[in-house]
Length: 454
Image (cartoon, rainbow, N blue to C red; front, top):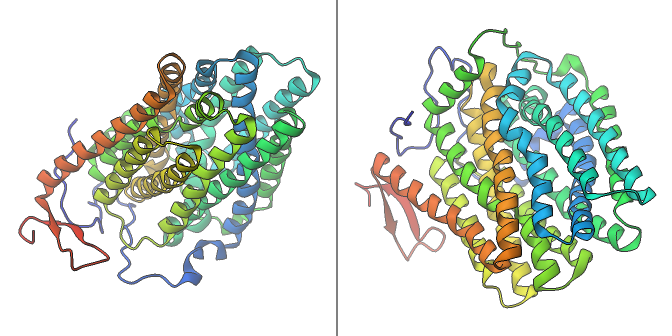
């Protein structure tokens, strides 16, 4: 189903129909926010508690992911095997993602999260035991990654929609950006800690730390004040719920186009840790510590992007597509970096543009969705974003191992950049947009405006 034509104006009030009566308007801020309002959603007590638990969990999750990838590389000596691990962890989201969204719409999100975090803690503890006892084999990691992927099918849609129940529609955009900031700050700390642990005591203790963090997250969820949650009415069970979510998503350009761009980013550009493992091991020869450092540099840029997204005044579809294109361009530049110093510098910029795209597309999709159908819509978005990595991880790992890591990285960035350019041209034609160049305007020398103004 083709999306309808898109207006060139900022999306400020989605179309209201029988399926979208609860769609929230997308906030447009005409002035820069005061710095004290950068993280204003944290003034909500429930969200503050959730954010603390989420921060601890994200640090440990990054530690486990880095340790897991490096452990597989050490056990197998194959970058392709690392890609297979990524694929197994994300494949369930590709196959079962919409079902997870339907569960998020039908049942209490808080209870789903408690169940999923408990299961994730058990899996992390099992992996820690195997690694610390010296009995771990590659197939053990494969099985645990697959089961963790099944847990993610339920966890991710519920987690995305639960943010709205914590803060309500007023602070939803800010809360999404704060969540991204938390995730990237954890991504800055986690890989660095993982690199230290891998060098000092091995991967097992990183897995153990994640098991403890899952227990911490469950505790935080139990501490939330249920009487202060903005609980949405569960969707009744009926036939065709998944089809309804798909038709709804395809009917709105502010959902369809971010979804399409997320697909290109997910397949080609979201398996960056696989390529960083290849560069750390085969190009720069910097070992586990260097691998953790490269991931930390990406997270540093992503943290800056997440903070910048909290201060974004206008949420436009074309700016989301632009950020996706810039991320691809940065990866292409990194493929030609002459040294690790330059490579690391471009990785910081890659992280920045990646997060600007992810937070913008997440906000646009969520706020453009009816509350009653948001779980299914977000599950489709997550299915594309996470499930695409199940395809891209092994593919890019194979290219890096059998062709060249530089070629793999160039493909990783070049395809999304070309896709963003194509989508940008399509949107410009549909919205009658053009470019206006004014070199006297130092802040905005190039603007996208209506063709009449151009």
